[in-house]
Length: 307
Ligand code: CP
Ligand code: NVA
Image (tube, rainbow, N blue to C red):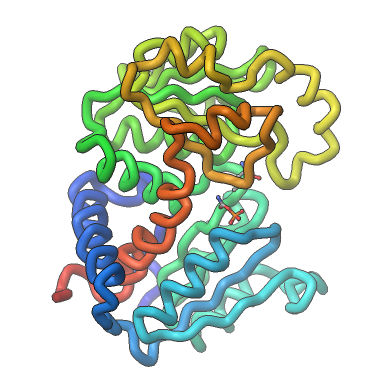
């Protein structure tokens, strides 16, 4: 197999709308079976290697549990316990790991690093979060919206926070799936023009209320993402009036959902009242990481030839 013919999921836009719709349809089937305790083990003898260069709870547990539930197995590596931490080039690591396993998931820093890994991998590579993107999160988020509110096409989603990995992925999803993202960030924390495409899917807003106005989904994230800890104090000041609280949710659509990829900081980017309130979908959203990623693993390893 040549490395160039392998499909990867490094950005949300790596998959067409048709492929994404297939994955959402499979997520529903796989989740239903799981809830009925019906065995579904199409990945017997397949191995997933997971490489974590940043901390994780949800991503690790959902990939690890999902792979075992589908009959496969998992190897968990971190920078500290592998030769990556002793400067073995990422290209060499990719060449070696991808001769031994069937699929790889990586959580790392720069997107260029996962691209270099994928460029040297014989097997599919999944982005488990980089500084720029978090495509598995948005697969689960959109599936959750679909489950609770129906198709996302034509809807309005409000992003309130900095232009981080989750935000850029929402933006790709808006373009790919045909909805509008109202994007509000404090001055100096907005999107990098080189990472966004302008169009009807993006509306830049000045403040949280403008973004939330009429939105059917309001979403936010921590003020300081992993890897940017040195900026925490400056960010705390810049984001002081940017909490998603009941007054922000009040201007959204009456049936609006609230989502957050988690982990969340109650009293910073979101009030406890909203995070733990009736509009919050965060626990379904977290659970759906498991089901959506099982559909993703199935698609990358088996294609559409599945029961
Ligand atoms: N949302 C998310 O990716 O969570 P973890 O950092 O716990 O994996
Ligand atoms: N934007 C956050 C997401 C964590 C899941 C971060 O990168 O730390």
